[in-house]
Length: 298
Image 1: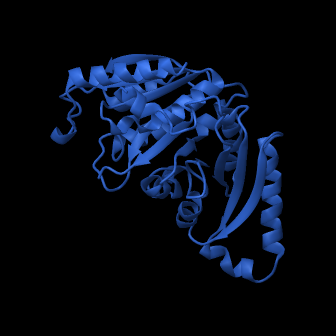
Image 2: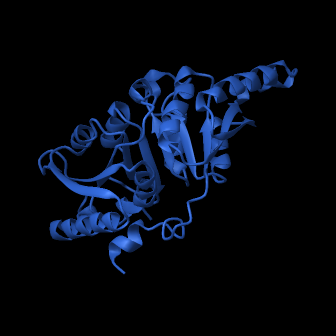
C-alpha cells in the first residue's frame, strides 16, 4: 500500500460500491443576507448527494432579556429560519434549531455531531472585522470538523451547476494532505477535476520556518504519489507548480475554480499557511468557497 492510498482513502466510504452516508451539515445563520446566501453555495457543494442540514440561530447574551420576556422573539426567529430554509430547495432534509449562548462557543459545541459546518465569513460583526476578531475566526481556530466558508465574493458568483474544478494547495507536508479524502468524495460526486497546487516561496519575500522545510525532491515525490492515488480512485487530477508569494499564487490558481480546499492548523501550531497575512488574504479575496480541515500542529 502506498502513501497515497493511506493519505486519501476515507475509511470504508469510498473503497467499495456502497455510497457514502448523507452529509450532516450545520449551518449557523444570523438573519443576514450573506448567511442566507451561503445556502446557495452549499447546495452546489452537495450536488445530488443526500444531506441532512440543520439551520442554527444563536441567541446571544445581549438578546437573552428580550428572549426571556415572551415567546414573540422565539416565534420571529423560528419564522426567519423557516424562510431561510427555503434557500436549500427540494431534495435536502432540513430542520431548524435555536441555540443560546456565545455564538462561537455554541457553534463549536454543536458542530461535533456533524460532518461539516457551513458559514459565511462575516455577519453582524461588520465587514471591517470579517476575519480578525469575528465569530468565524474563533470557530476556525478551534473547529474539529471540516468547515465550508463563503465570503461576499463567493455569494455573488455562486452558480447552480456542479463543481467542475477543485484546487488544493499543499505545502509538501503530510499534514497538508488531510483534506484530500473530502476532496476525493466531492470530485467523484461531481466528476470534477482536481489540481494539487505546490507553491515555491521566494526566499527574499517569505521565509518559512526551518522546522517546516520540506525537501524539494520529497515534496515532488509525495505530490506525484497523491495524484496517482486520486487517479486510481477515478478522479481526474494533476499537479500545478508555481513560484511566488503563497497567497497570491493560491488566489491566481483558484481563478475560475469552484472550490478551494486546504488544510489549516489550529491554534496550537505555527502554521505558515494559517496565522498571519497569507490565510487572511486568501479568505478575504477568494472568488470561490473554501473547504478547510483544521488540524492541530502538535
